[in-house]
Image (tube, rainbow, N blue to C red; front, side, top):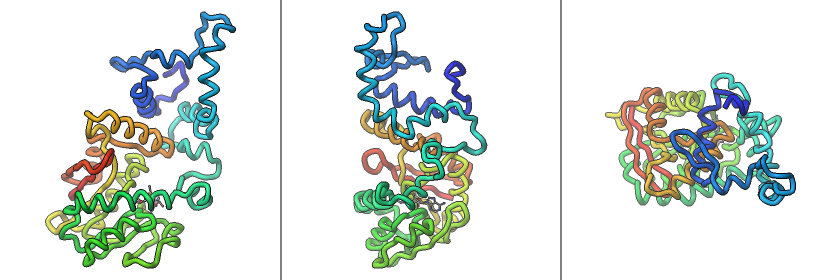
Length: 306
Ligand SMILES: C[S@@+](CC[C@H](N)C(=O)[O-])C[C@H]1O[C@@H](n2cnc3c(N)ncnc32)[C@H](O)[C@@H]1O
């Protein structure tokens, strides 16, 4: 690590990248010692060869990989790994690659045509929520009110409201998202900040949110969620839809998808967590109990109790 100039504070991130590279066959690993595989030998120079011998194996893969190497994120990754990390987290790879913008939410606001983030999230919600209600609908039974925290354009809240018409459903998101929200549904929208406060409700719903944030930020968000709900014996709970890495270790395709997703989240200082990592932030935020149920593909539904 020291030889490569990698800052010790980036050790966890280095492990995340090595996890992807070993799963995809670029490295083999035995007791945290990584070795080149046949495939990755094509990517490195063999100094014992003459220049003409080096040409054929080395240069063609480099050419093929040009689009990846030239992306703004790839160009910044070298500097990012060498960076000292101020508390609680340094600038993300995204911020380094897009000077002047610190979060993808800013990009979604400024550049909606090239980067239709809110629409993409809405399409995922339209696909997933009917499955959530069909396979795990019981998690919503008995709730009188629910706030979808950072609920985007409100598709999830509207689907829950349609299935449970007596439930009061509210969506909290940033002002620039709430102004674009549809007006033809029976959902209330509140513009706000998840780090400030969350409107009170029987239950808080968090879909694809906590993986966007580092552990300290998640603990802050979860503490705010806890303040918004009543005690467990009065029906209070948090419902989370996110990944639990390694939850189905027998399915290698799921693990591959999860660790690739984790790389994507690393770009914005987020993280896909395994059960131990989830447990740590839950208990740090003051919650006492949780239940994980695999949902669809790589995602799980987590019920979290105060
Ligand atoms: C990954 S999207 C998930 C949206 C929605 N839950 C879904 O699954 O479709 C994250 C959402 O968090 C919102 N967000 C980011 N920072 C926020 C903040 N500080 N307060 C409130 N919402 C925020 C974004 O605007 C975005 O809608």
